Length: 202
Image (cartoon, helix red, strand yellow):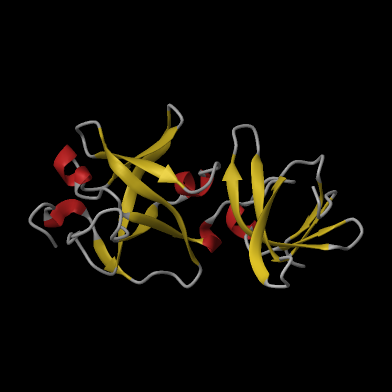
């Protein structure tokens, strides 16, 4: 696969599942025994901890140009993954030294949505919130969830909407709504709607 990674590393050519979600990327090697440090895309990396194998794709070219370790999608078995000092670290089967771990720096991690553990009551995976329409108690359309942002104790909904300028031109704008019970009345995943106590001019 590459001069820098022996064939025993356990990388297996694979197909990306139809319901695959990008859940993080490998930041760098961690320690000298083949562990890697992960940057998860969610404040709750429980899906990473529960999955016994991960699907990997090459890094974004802007993050790591010239990557040639593998192309397409590969899968790898996970021996262990855990929290460590606010980060996620993982050990893969067949990856036993720092050089092999460093070769995976920047690699993108995917998991099938169907493999995620069930969320607790009143808890949601970020991926399930993105794309939902946001309306307030009066039924005013506030836009669509484009992203979420972690701000320490809670997450914030990044809601994209269309604003009309003074000259009549329409432009994309964004409003930030704290994802806390004080402002969020209801989340209807099936109905693709979030109802909030929020006004357009906040």
